[in-house]
Every structure is written in C-alpha cells, then in structure tokens.
Length: 386
Image (cartoon, rainbow, N blue to C red):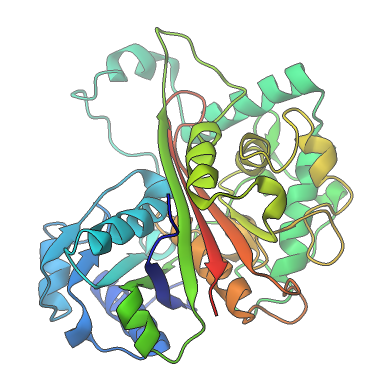
C-alpha cells in the first residue's frame, strides 16, 4: 500500500482535569475550537465529523447541530479506549473515498465531576451477561487476570509493572496540566493498596474530566496550511474475543492490529522513535509493547524496568505526557490523547525535557474493552512529512 494522503493538521488537548462549572457540551465546543485554531481552520471548513457513542444527545447529530457544522460524512464508531485510533483511520478512509476533506474528531467527558465512572448498569440483552455476571466481573478484575497470567507464563514481577508508573510520573512532572505530577518510586507503587491482585492502586489510571480533538485533512488542504505536516502512513484494527470458549490472557488484539499497521506503513517496529500506548493499567501497556513487536514477547518486564520507558534515559520513549496513569483519562476513551502527544512529538512541540530528538516516526496504540475476554485494538503509525 502506498502512503496515506491524509494528514493530522490540528490537535488540541483540553487543559482541565476537573470541569466544575462547565457542561459536557461546552467541553466539546472548547476542544473543537482548540483543534481548529491549531490548524488555522474554522468550523465552516469542516465537512466530516467523528465522535463516540458517549457524546450527548443523538450521537453525532446533536453535536453537529450544537457546533454549527455543515457536514457530509459522520461516524460514531465506539470501541472504548481504541475508538479514536479507529476514528483517525476511518477519517483517512473517508477522505480517500472523497466523502470529506476536513474531518473533525472530538472527545469530551466529565466522569470525575459527575461521578459517572462506575461500572455500567447491567444490560441483560448483552449475550454474555447471563454467563459472566454471577461471577462479579469488573474491568479491573479482567486486567488483573491478565497480569497474573503474564507473571505465571513469563516471570514478570510487580516491581517491573511498577516501573511503567514510575516512567509515567517522570514525564507528568513536566506537564503542567497532568493530574498527578509527583514523581513516584517502585516502592510507592507496591505500597499502594491492592485493587485486584496483582494490580495496586498506582497500577491503575486516573479518572479525569477533559478531552481533546483532532483534524484529519486531505493532502490538498494540508498543503495550504502553515503547520508542520504529520501524515498517517499505516493503521490497523482488530477484535479479540473468546475463541470457541477459550480465553487467551497472554496476548492482546494489538498483535493483529499492529501487523496490519506496520504492513501498510512498510516499516518495522525497530523504526519507531516514539510510542503512545494506552495505559488504563500498567499491564495494558506492557502487553501492547510486546504484541506490537516493540520488544520480544515475554520480555516486556525487562524492557520497561529500570526506567526503560523514560524519554532520553530508556530504551523507548513512551507516553511523554504522563499517559492515562498520570496525565488524564477522560470518559474511558483516552485513546485520543495518545494521538495528540504523538503529533506533538512529531512536530517537535513536546516539552523540552521529554522531546525525542529527530522524531520522525511515531506509533499510537489504543485498547478498549475487557482485555481478559473481549477487546478491540486500534493502531496508527504517523510520520513527520515536512
């Protein structure tokens, strides 16, 4: 496949982490405005619109009206934490098909202020609910099972997982908007309360308000703008579930999504200079690093240990904004911020303390769902195109 002709021209992350006094619709308006201003465009230029099913009202229809847009293509794909990786890919596909030329992708949420981040109400129409509900599953339980299995199969330790949080805290200390800016130690992580063995509280992501927005545009539009050019060169998506009743706790859907993305981009994992990887829990990030081929399967623990993910000090700079573990995680759809930080790195606009030198290739990976049973992966590979 030839390189995509879709570019990310605008990126904006909402600075708030607790949106008291702001409505959800207002947050959507503010992130859309921020991305448009970043690109040098206006709402009159937008002809494609993307959001997820958590958007208020009737999916994209209410927000299109609220934002005053005149669009000819809409999409509200929702695969949880991987949704916004898929949105970027789907926007590029729509642009290639001539359905739109300026696609606005928006996310906003107020789970911290509203307190609506608990487990969703039971829907007995979901086919697996009657089989699983009696055992009391929660999202964190399924990730705890994956961590336990990884430790059993590969000898991974809680100390190694803790290094993922330590790296995130080092990066967040340079981010004035990060929810948790204090640098923590491995001991801090291990001494925090156990949530779902072997995952401690500091192995879990934050719950924040906020959001972000992206603008994906055609090559013709990108040429006219005075912003550094970031091109999408590869994308992949995959769904992993119970296969004949068998649950594989050791691998994620990133195994397949990554293969597709790298194949389209015609590069290898060794070419990646920076990676934004979804980190709802430390084990989420560890398994994706392995499954994406950024390190050998089963060797993720050693790869992340001893500061392996700290920019300028480790083996690969990962989540230089602090990630979901320390920066923000709005509305259980934190994948959009992974793309935003990758764009900053490729533009050379990340904080000077974490900016990767000569960053020309970046990867963003998102994970949505219950990694222990059913989940979806989205992967995009971006390049600096100037």
